[in-house]
Image (cartoon, rainbow, N blue to C red; front, top):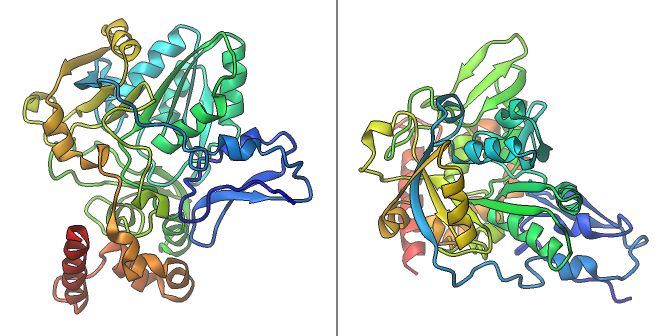
Amino acid sequence: MNHPTLADIKTCTGCLACVDVCPVNALSGQYNEEGHLTYKCDTNKCILCHQCERTCPVVSNFPYRTDNKSEFYAAWCKDDDLRKHSSSGGVFAAMAQYIIGLGGYVVGASNEGVCNIKQIVINKQSEIAKLQGSKYTQSNAISSFKQTLALLKEGKCVLYSGTGCQVAGLLSYLKKRKYTGKLITVDLICGGVPSRLLIDKFLENEPYRIKKILSFRTKENGWKSKGFIYNMLVEDENGKIHDYTGVHNLVTDGFSSELTDRYSCYDCQFNGVSRASDFTIGDLWGDESHKDQHAKGVSLVIAHNEQAVAFLKEIEEILYTEPTDKDRAIQFNHRIVNGRNPFRYLIERRYLSLFFQKLSYKTLKRLYGNDYSWNSPWILYKIVRKVIKIILKRI
């Protein structure tokens, strides 16, 4: 039978637009053995319409990179409370506040339960906090594309935020569908999607029962344009808060190591200076021009079209923006344009699933979380790995 051809384990981004577009629910989402979101097809339900194949931004070669002239800005939210609870300058929170104030809706990643990251829809100012802050794992976007289309058909304004591949999934899902509402898309300067196995092992093996990961990254110790230190906060079942500032762990160290990313993240198709999204946002790493604002956080905003530039002027009462040097911003945020990473060839990545099945938690923390002392024999392995990484990057 002529079943549709979708992205394989090497190319699937886990956007799951294919699940939302299936008219008979033959597709569903699941985690694969490597701890990454992907699709599952019930071939008994499949009616061979191939809508999923036409929607998959990978298989359909959806044109996400553009030739538009994008404008780079330093930015921060003028509402100090919103800015305080954001990872950097609070740009997304300011946009969300404005859109909701107009009666619109906002879609973004929320941490539900202990640590279940999913795309949700909000339309209340009090709910903005749910979508603030970095989440160092992939959010499940199933149903968010359907919900966005339904709201757009009702004539609503929708602000949709996600990784580049998720926004590509949305735009590919919408394609030429007609609606009267207004869509504003915001993607992230993405460092790659780490395996969910990092969080699962952390939750299972820390010496206390975890009630919730409160934040993957706070600004309680301030924000820095260079040398930023992750400070994850966790609440246990007794209400005690555990601060992981400067403490090696599988979650934040595992994320920054890039050793468990999706294979598609090592050859990302959804980055670039100019994109089909309206905005790209992230930290303004390397900033030297706004040192008086560093403690509160400074964001980088890239506006990819004239409408996006006009929107920034429209919300200038709540969001400060100032043109910033494009080349310097890219220099300190290379993932804007560089989607290639040779770490896929390292043994930790190639045998990711096997290692998480067989190795002890202590060993996993050493491999992926750098959790060992400087006089440990593991330091030799780290040096060897560093040399291998340098060689691979030059090849």
